[in-house]
Length: 180
Image (cartoon, rainbow, N blue to C red; front, side, top):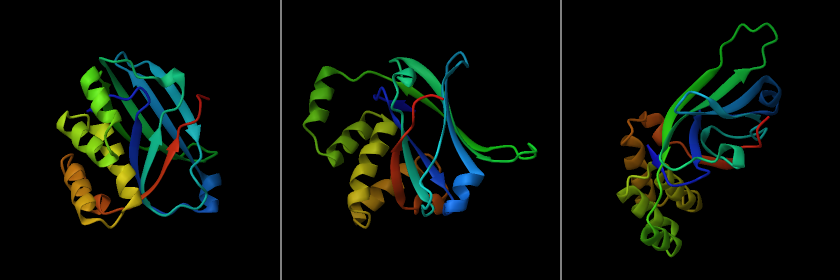
């Protein structure tokens, strides 16, 4: 799937509410690898101590993890139980991303567009990560708008997500910390 962003936002579903206790019991990790399977970026981070279940955006924010145009990458989002005995494997999801450059005409058009129009442009150009992020921006402002709900549903069904996930709210968008 494509992005035009040097520092894209990745979207994840957290299926349960996070509590203060979870902050000490679960650690979250984002890993980004290049097409040669080299780790480019790896960070462990915290999510808010109290958060309802839902969809979370995590945007890269460090020069170490800048995506180069024309390159393929694999990402992993992991939840690890803080298990002193090492009995539990982390739960994770993974995906592919490729950054492609935009034409100067398209870049100008996007700068002049509203988030909704950016969504439509990105969708038309098949920049899925950017389309989803633009749509999420608008949907967080107007979560009950039927046009936005229908667009969100259509985009997520297009990648065969479970209906239970599609109906979840967007609960936040955060920046991945610097590499650690």
